[in-house]
Image 1 (cartoon, rainbow, N blue to C red):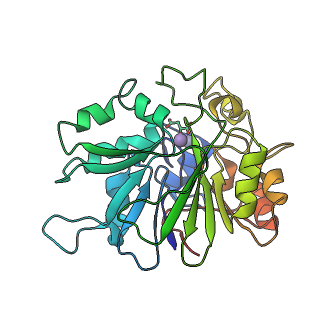
Image 2: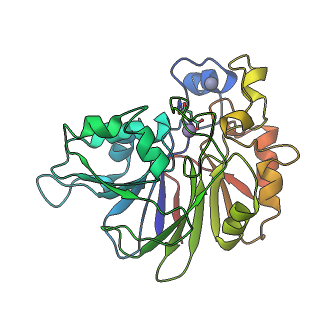
Amino acid sequence: MLLHVLGSAAGGGFPQWNCNCRNCAGVRAGTLRTRARTQSSICVRGDASADWALVNASPDLLAQIRAHAALQPARAPRDSGIATVLLMDGQVDHTTGLYMLRERGTPLPLWCADPVHEDLTRGNPILRVLEHYCGVERHPIPLDGSEFTMAGVPGLRFAALPLASKAAPYSPHRDAPVPGDNIGLTIIDAASGQRVFYAPGLGERNGDVDAAMRAAHCVLVDGTFWTDDEMIALGFSRKTGRSIGHLPISGPGGTLEWLGSLPAATRKVLIHINNTNPILDEESAERALLTRHGVEVAHDGLQIAL
Ligand code: MLT
Ligand code: MN
Ligand code: ZN
């Protein structure tokens, strides 16, 4: 399979439009060794497939399509390399791009869990608005771990796992999470059996997620914040990372410790990086620590072939 990182930043992107933190100011001024990043999305295809599954529809989707020629029209007057869309949650940074696909001539195949479908038809009724354009052909993601395939992306199988994270802030049940608000996704190459585990929003370590990560050859997981109080320390928020569904990378019980418990051969990549995170500075001590532990930081355009 080929997995392409379209957007590696968390909500807001990097730099964020209104942010003057060290990282955002540094990337604007060109004084920081780093790369700008768009908001959270990947696409994936099987080796024998021309078409891709889009996983999350970022507010930056049009720029991401411009940057990735394989998604652009090539075979007919109206055409796209995006055969189907799957949503990990109902967050603004993962769903707003659905509006950018409204010119399709046929309903958009859309895979999402039931609570996300409910949020996107009620709290933030994107799918009802889209009914006035292309409409969607909705498919529920099974939450019992059973494998499923998606039409248009041959050679891949998928399996979802409900995660302890958070529904989007606009969700009527933001403070009463239900299974399916957020998922972790295993993507399996049907021919080789190679597996990727993808979880851009991971709020808690538990046995099921650990097992899915151990079974994977590559994990792409939540690297939003370095510390739990990152946004508080900068004066940008009163909320901890954990309270909004993101386990910090550093410290006891953090993601780095967790990744360190996985087999050495597992490829470990952090994704969904918030613009405040010191790991975006390629010369930072935090980035050096990750490198020493064999942990990569995703950037837009990163391709993983498995
Ligand atoms: C999150 O994952 O918490 C989001 O990035 C929030 C957002 O989209 O603003
Ligand atoms: Mn997000
Ligand atoms: Zn910033």
